[in-house]
Length: 135
Image (cartoon, rainbow, N blue to C red):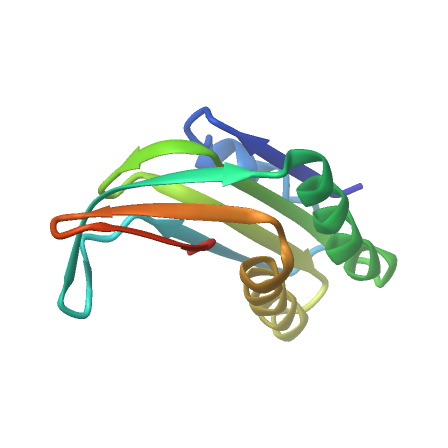
């Protein structure tokens, strides 16, 4: 069963990775998104994430379900609250029998999460505040 978490606590990256390990899986792919300082010419000081948690968890479960039905394992965790530079904001991990599936599914999950899951970011930059969707 997928492990899905939205929390204002720091992400326990090693613990999340350990949830993916199993002898039946030969490929584990993870993506960890951190708060970066520069986006082009824009300098970020910190980011604040908010979520419509109930809906976000439902949508994350809907994303994970078809992957798990095909035999994979999914772990997704996203931070909320105020994060400073280099803090981990999101962890997406997939374990699969083979690496190609794990890479494909991990990329699908992070791309779809950013586009469809109701998690928003408030970027506190050196010049102004910007609002957007995750990562």
